[in-house]
Image (cartoon, rainbow, N blue to C red; front, side, top):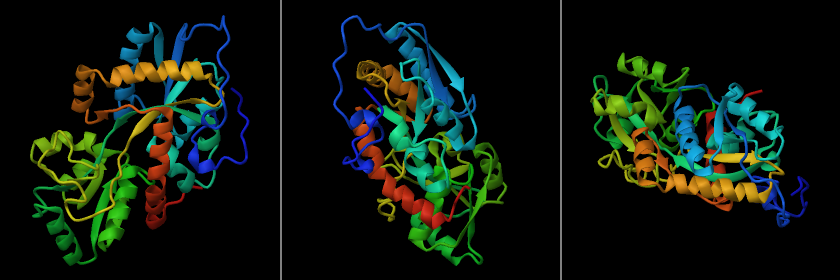
Length: 331
């Protein structure tokens, strides 16, 4: 497969050029894939939720594909350094990466310039997991038992409220900005370096609210220190069956989840994409693996490359709106 494009194909339909052109059948005698080490670029630091989940996948892929999958953390610039490294890697199956909804649906609107083009340089393989954001308040400092009560409380609060996030342009920041715009709440964004800083600020009463990744808040919700008011998934979350969705809580069109999927450089042979995608499907369908990922705060899922493209295209307009209402821009 080549990296050339057919100009008539609308850019919005594809995440990668691999889906834009006919694919040649593999020739006899092609080298088997995988062989040797295969690098998986994680564009976030070691120990974070993405890093942990990718390592769970790598562990299973080692056994299924009989190869050595090695994690390489390439961090910085909102994950763009890692994805740029992938885009510039040889398309021979020796390296692939995890990409977030931020890379595929948010960063093109958030950043004035990107070192890579997700629509031209990256080819989808499969969505790997999904996790919602959860609307939370500190139980000690907020009387609200429902999202409707919180909205009323926030509107009555002089000078508005403050909400925390792991940083400008993250899904918690943009979800919070969109929530405030949709509900008419006056809200001030307070960026932190992560939930490890946001949570203490909320528990001390310095910040009123967060619409942050569920995986980071499961513990404090279970302990009763935080009260979960709604989740941003389309359906109720398995580990929080009594917490309504945003739509159920009275805020429609707020399905904004932090899904992630695996991508390869454009030009990667289709036979490699199919073999990797099949292995990922096998991993995601394993019940013990699903349970392990759910304990980590996410839902193991799988999609075809086309399904991943369709998901990105479907989600992109809402994230574009969220970036717009937030006023965020990274030069």
